Length: 336
Image (cartoon, rainbow, N blue to C red; front, side, top):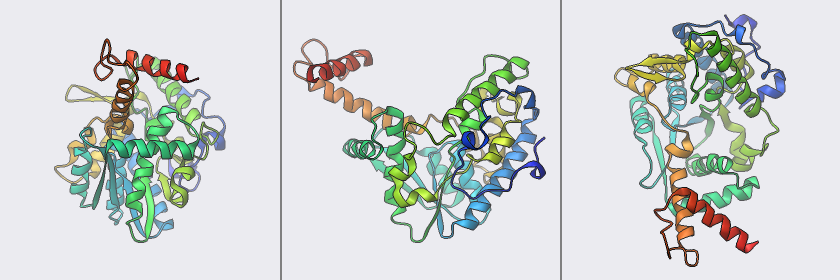
């Protein structure tokens, strides 16, 4: 079992490029996943989360903020920060008529936090998309849709006097197998090997500087970038989480399969009485849960519908997505 004595000192850095620092994160080590009890894993998660956030709060004075998407990762980060004696400003990005912000709103209310809900219109999403693409130099779908909420959140950052750390739950999915599904029973050796491979592959790809846009956060956030804290993206976290077995990270509750099981237990234990259910709610990635993907997809349909002759045979506003994509590609070919 991993403990404080065999970990490097706690860090207050915004994030660490774990793959670059260790160099061996993709090397399989399924046998090292020895923490099988989710309660034991939850205890380790709780201890390390408090230690990490406390170090960050000690370094960054002022009023913290938390990017509260409504998912388990950001809710837990917010709850631990409150336990440590601060009241971060919660910031949630949603889109007109597309988003379910109830989890974020409920969590902010239960924790007694100021909650800034930034609601984006279709035109604002389009404008932010252009700004993100200009800053990043790419139109890659996932880079742009990840960048829009960060750029929008600057509206709240600008209103917080003496802004401190900006906390995010970024990195949790990679190290805890969030969003993954196992092909084998969690108790089997095959599941242990599969989980180890999935987590190591994702971490090796994402926890490194040399990605499609290495300067992603500074490009979007300018001076705010040095305060954006990826709570779970550190070498210490990697060393702790690489010991978690499938039975610690995957379980069942009320007949439903649950990912990030130990993290949810830790969050359940942390939330105020009556709010524990928030630890067990499912949420899509922010690009979908915020409604951004839906808004952009509808904008693409609208663009396709306004191409010359587009409504002659079928209507791009309600035809299948494959036909819309083909229309858009043909319009690009025509202009090339």
